Image (cartoon, rainbow, N blue to C red):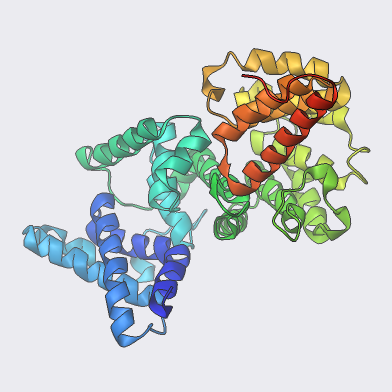
Length: 422
């Protein structure tokens, strides 16, 4: 990469949402704003190669995108109608919610995109794509649907915004609670996509992880009394506390039981504990509070073997009641395998295999393979590892699964059976 190319790539990671939000204030049209911002980034490549990287890349990009937006509005002869929207009032004149001000441009845009006129999944998908820079393929994997299905959802959401004349307007304080769960889901999925990248050479996408953590902290500062906000921040903090130990020096994936717990961020774990207590206080815990409690039990156990797996199963039971997700059921099966053994968990897996939503979910055959391996059914385990390998696109995960596949085939050969089955 040249210096200019590296600067544009860095600005895309850091500044995209800020530039988009500033441009959307001019266009009041998400499609047009996105188009203008994309053109600003393209023009930056040439300009920065020629003139050097500016001191403030974000400001340069914002100016370029807004100028492009104004040019388009003039060309379409709509500037006269749009002109009042281009005049930003003084802060004292702006309709800033007094109960829940949204001081962060990125968070403001997320709340704006999570408009109740759109279907829930469309809100989340559009926000991840437009605001967070997550690809359609990555969003599709998060929702367990095909790329084409997700692309259609995003397209329909954009068209509905235009057809229904849904304005770019920061919701008032009274509107924020109704949008909160969708916003929390966006931030959680953003973190999940970074925590284990769906594809690529690296297990973790640090830029997405750090962006999600920052948004969760801003949300908590904005709504400190919302229990699910506490739960989300706790979940992200306690999960991220072991980021540095998830791979070894060579980039090899390390399972939870292989990680060096002394290297975990124990300050973050302690801080998340207080948040978990706050999220669970008062009963009727939400899905993020329960997930945070599960993650905390993992993090606070002295060792993998000393984890309170029975309590984790109980928490998963509670989570399934309020969030009957097949992914939650799969995670529960893993905990069941530690309490009642892999045979009991395998029966759970076989029931989940009938759920079409998990048809392309790589962790289903991976979990099945692990249970079969622990039962000594190495030929069947090899088949399941191969199935998981066919679905995995992250190179760290592929290397791990390849190693397990080879070990299962070797074990089967030593027992006198075929090395692989067809």
